[in-house]
Length: 251
Image (cartoon, rainbow, N blue to C red; front, side):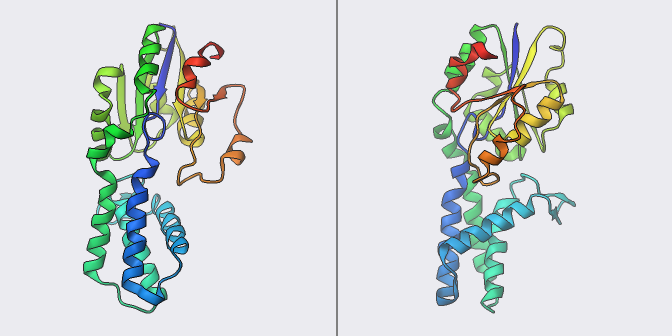
């Protein structure tokens, strides 16, 4: 065995970013429907939802006493909070019925029926290629286990990966745990779309990075800024998952 590859899941092996597009657009329609002429332009509604949702990642969920992070409840709640924000601006009382409607709209982002169609077409060929090189593919995904477990099923994670794990956040210690038993005779690589979350903690753990940048809701318009601080001595950038096979010799 030559190399261990610890893959990210969302927006690395399967599309995740657009799961939220439909519910966000539906939220905007509901807000415009309810506020009428007092509703702002749709672009302002969408921008405010993104602002609120980003901020709520580190806000405390009163139901659990812990940060929302990437839990299932954060996104639908953000749609509700966006509605409340614009109701306040319009000096209107929010409707509990509309809030419940928006929460249900937000939950549509987690419909497992969609997951198999979102797996990237190069996924299996890359995994089989690595096994052919006598390498070890693993899977490390951050997020809500109630959501991510359905995605693991969609890609048959238990069949295709030597080791797989769902965590709240990726840390250098978790990356070290992933390669337990492979410390002395393998080189390690973290493959992901988010440089700060998928690559940086892995570099701290002694990995090398394979970065496949994607303009997600958290880093939209920031790719060039991120690229300027990449540790190129220990990381390569790919245009797509499929390019891993083409550039394997550079690793």
